[in-house]
Structure formats: C-alpha cells, structure tokens
Length: 562
Image 1 (tube, helix red, strand yellow):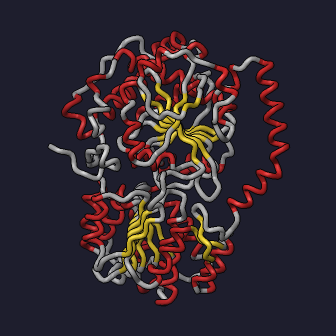
Image 2 (cartoon, rainbow, N blue to C red):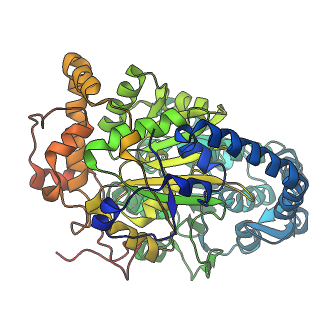
C-alpha cells in the first residue's frame, strides 16, 4: 500500500525529495482532514499504533460530536449567506405558483449565490454572462427564468421552441433535462432533448409536434436547425449556453458559430461557466444583442475550487504509477472514487487490468455508445461506493453525489481542466471531498500554474518499500493474454499521443519521457513497437484548439505563439 504524508510546501526540489528519509511517525500529526489518514496510511502502522489511533479517534469523535453537529448546523443553516448559499428565498422572487410548487417538491427554499444574483436580471429580460464554480446551482439559475418566461407568454406546442439550452456533453444535457423536467412538473409547457446517440428521426417528430424547452448538444442541434422541416425555432425567446468555455474548443466552435447565426437575433441570452476566458468574451460579442450583466460570485476568493475540497499531489516515478494507483484503490474500496485518464484507450486498458487483478470498477469514455455510458453513469451516481475510470467526458458539470476522491492519474492540459475535474466532488454547501493528482518528477512545474490559478495543493508522499511487488506478475499477465496485451499497446500509444498534444511543451515534453519507465507503467518489460508519428499526430489527437498558458495567464486564455 502506498504510504502518504502531508506537507504544506506545494513545490519542492525533486532531488532533495528523493534523498530525504521517510518519517512514518509524521502520520500521527499529519493534517489530513476527512479521514485521509485512514484512506492512505493506516494499513502500514504497527498494530498497537493502529489500535491506539482508532481508540483515540473514536474518543475524539464522541467528545466532539455535539460540537461537530453545531458546526454542521452553522454551515448548513439556510439563509446564512455564507459559502455558496444566499440569504434570499425563492419565494422572494415572486415566482408563479406552478414553479414554486415544483421548487418546493425539489426540496429547495433558499437560493445559492449565483441563483440570487442571476435570476432577477434574467427575469427582467437582461442578458447575463455568469461565472460560478461547479456545484453552485447554475442550472436552476438559468432554468427558473426560462420557465417563468414561457409561463407568462403562455407558450404552447404550436408556438414551437421558446427556450434552447446548449450543453457540451450528452451526460450534462441529460442531467439538465432531468432538472428541467422537475421544474416543469406543474406547467403545461413541453420539454425535449436532442443529443448524439439518439435517433434523429424520433427527435424530429417531437420537434415538429412542438417542444417549448429544448435541451441539446451543439452538433445535434445544428443538424436539426438545418435539416428538420417543421422545427419551429423562429419564436425563440431565450438561449442558454452552459459550460461556455468548453463550447469554444475547436470541435464545438465550428458548430456554435453557425448555430448563433441561424437563431433569431431578437432573443435573451445567458452564458454560464465555471471559468471565464478571452474566448468566452468572443462568443459573448456575437451572442449578445446588448452589453450583458457580468456576474462572478467567485470574484475575490482566494481559491477557485470548492471550500470543502482537500487537494494534494504526489510525485510518482513513471514506472510505478500503476502500482501506486492499484495500492490507493485497494485501500479505498469502501469509498466512491473517480480516476481520470488522458485517453479512451487508457480507460479501457486500466479497467480491464484492474478487473483481472481483483478490483471491480466501472468505466466511461467518449468512445462508448450512449447506451452504455448512460447506465454506467447512472449506476455510479446511485452507488454509495465504487470506482469509476473516465476521461474528461464526465469532467464537467455533472452532479454525481457523494464522491469521496478525485484522482487525476494523467494530468490535465490546463488548470481550468483540473478545476472542472475536481468539481465532481465537494459539491454544494458544506460538502467535503478529496483530490489527488499524480505527477512524474518532470511535471512538477505544473504546480506553479495551479498555484497561480488559485488552486492550493498539499504534498503527499509514498513509501516505495511498502508497495506490493506486482511487477513480474503484471508483466506476465499482459504478456500472456492476447487481448490484454493488445489493449495495453493501444493505451501506451494513446498515452504518448495525448502527452504530445499538451499545449505547454516546457512541462509536458514527450521527448523527455523515459519510454522504458512509461512502458513499465503499462506492464511491459520493454517499450512495445507501436505506430507513432508524434509530430504529425499531435494536433489530430484531440480535436480541439490548444491555447498556451503562462504564469500570468493560468487559464490558457492567450493564444499560443506560432
């Protein structure tokens, strides 16, 4: 089992770190909230220390129970105005009776900060450009005004589509559709969903009958705008673009521009995202008919991630990355864990390998059909514990309950992607969660970019002597299993291509990688022969725009110099 310790210094010299002696006694004083000591270290304490530690922990919990309950009540006190919650109630907004009844059924009384600040101007017909961290209630912030608008206009199916909400992924679109369904519970207006993976003919029939509130992904929406006869969208009153920064990546930008051109100009528009960039401002210029109201509920905060999130990094030798991941997951089988990878092939291989060696897990990637991704995500969301291996297809916007750990096995391309990934945990007022990012020694400078982006990380260490000796077993397993061997080669190749596609070559330089060590992390005794054309393949690996980022531009908002 990997043995981790906590240190406050976010960046340290890797040479000094390797030479320093490990001090297991620090486990007794390490400040790792939310049972991180148990999660990471307890297995390798001497038995008497474990017993004493457990007794002390139980006594402390009992002594502090009343105090903790009081603190929870303070944090969760409705209307306290602290954290993400606001003092205003939904009833103070003069909402219609059907909407208020639905909100009560959903269990909400007080609004979040983004809801309290965005709903009033949106209900006045103003355009809004909103920035709020994940888990802050953005969805209701734009849906409540949308439903109220159609209610007041007495929209019916014969009027066509009055509201369009555009989401970057199918999963986020489905989740937004579900929230809209709950909000429309007592209304007569119709609701529809158009996303990739569903039949266009069935969607077209529903659109022709009349869908008042339409939730869509960009590609499928553009398809219907161009090709579905009888789709009435000229009466559009309200357009929402959720996760707007994601929409500006290359594969969405070429769809968003014609969508904006085709839709009626006289409409209300709302753009929402967890981060704001120069590219969003560009979209705003073509989307808004007048200067929007800019709302940033996180402005002035010292950190851009959720308050209850404890974050750390571990400097991991490339060759031992998988063994350390295995040890971490083995110790946290009773927790709910999400592990992010850089490619679909890597998700596929690692999920297969983990199952072979006795760790059950789920997996989601962009290569999978919606018929598999949907049920998998639903099962993981409902589960109290479990492991989900995934790509960034689930890295944004999705509300997955009670995730204990976010592990970034492969580092993200930019700080903003890190922020979106860790936003899957510690969502909502008073919620808590943990995040861990694996970095090989050559990648340590990425921590400086995270620090400039207001992302505070502690350092966790592992004791190599206490790692399980699995190398020969794993190599033999992959060597002798044809399908696993093929999967490992594809994952190895995809890892290198993904690495080469990173925008900051000063940190993520594929030519500096020790391929022998990389191969070892994929359970090969030597680098396998794979078809690689690194330089020409890099730009094609991820079909999206790469923008350079620097210490003064941590979100990657400035274009890279040619």
